[in-house]
Length: 392
View 1 (cartoon, rainbow, N blue to C red):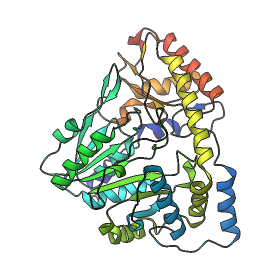
View 2: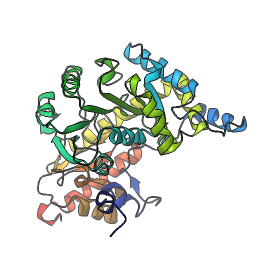
View 3: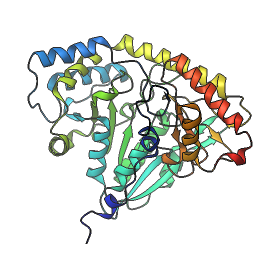
View 4: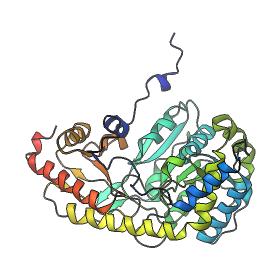
């Protein structure tokens, strides 16, 4: 008998790292594969973390997060959305991905059904699968007006045994943004049916119409079956810090205390103090990144919008393009060949869920000069292989 559960034994590495780990630190590569830019975390955040280290802040902290960070998060969220959030609802377990993991573990077990809105970042599927639950997908539709999905389509896929639904808005990789009316409709259905809604809002400040995306927090009751996951990685250029937060029903604070302790003991203490500085001093920096990402989207629009082979639509949020090549049947081979021939790193479409084999993901958070060069190499590669049958 093998000691591993089938769900663990059969788990696969996601397609992004499968490609990226082969040449992750190669200076010749233009890395458009991961969800990060090349702007380092700002000085005031790093200085706060260094000051915490110098002050000896290296001991255990509360598993739900340091009080000053949770207080700063309440101020930030209340100000952004016009709310009055009970601080008992806020937990900082570690990374945002850990927040998704704990939420899935709380809701799903063997024999349950978990529903995922896709295309979706591949690690979400892995988190759902290791619970033993059966997975279902509701796929966004690529239309002339961009990626679309209605609340009715998601609700229509709910089964009697559905225990959790995952929604990422703004979406990695498509840039789809769910509107507030649809959020309210979906949340009402989850409330009625007792389904946990896991809402990933880590790209909440990366939208191209306005300052922030609609949040489920704005339409939720305090006791709704809702976990809103967010983090510092994207809006404050803190990908390596691994600090995220969740907003949950207050009645679940004991469970989040216990599971945060089990999974991670708590977020890194001095990183949390850097996160406090990000919230209190970082608004100008957030807006600078917003401008960088807007310009990045313009560069991608210019390069791909009218390309004769590449089918591209401009995203409404996040900082990714998710183009399609109609006759492409092996997205992994496509990005591997591009990497070998042109030193450009992309993410293969297949890894973002079923129905995406003809797609690839491109992150446009990099500096504009590198992005433009990467796009030139990409289009040169596609045009060199313009007989689509030559693309494996």
